[in-house]
Length: 77
Image (spheres, rainbow, N blue to C red):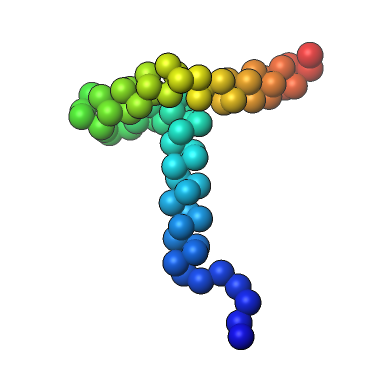
């Protein structure tokens, strides 16, 4: 019997990771789409709507806290 991760489990982990990243990283995702070739398209509208939704439920708080902590550490505070 082989112990390890099957391709199906690996795909599930990757999909879960993408969902978590999209949930907690909506602000940088919206900024990235705005700066990319997709800016000003329906993709941008979807990214902005997703960012507003995650903001409404407070899912942007962990990202903001981590971002401020890193900036404070870089500034030497």
